[in-house]
Length: 141
Image (cartoon, rainbow, N blue to C red; front, top):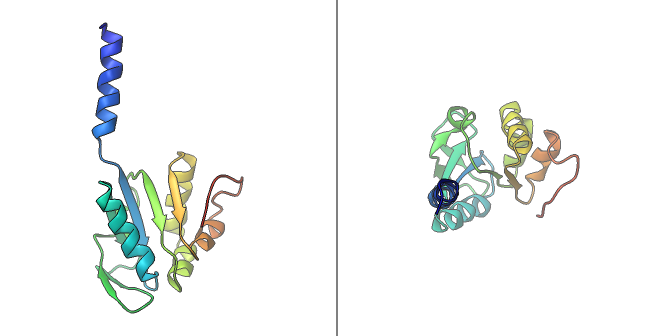
């Protein structure tokens, strides 16, 4: 095996063991099940999930009044790199995401880099608001 083959094998192996990361941006009024179940399923799949609260508090009150302690404040992770950004639906959570310019900047950066941007149920309103996927693209609700 030559050096080039070894290098390719090394980097392929390295990329397969590197943990994928996902950011779920929650807000007051985000839909409980869409946020909680999404984070649970991704964590069970071995993905390092960060739930970030849009408001400047360490907890958010979800649409059905459950109170969730977040992993981080959005303002503290907005510049970090993630493999995927996920927006749960719910009202007024989706409207809060749609109105926040910081969310728009993060989504636009991820789209430009070809990373995963996902929106559940009512959350595509935030994609429209921030000009995401206006050229078309893949998606599903």
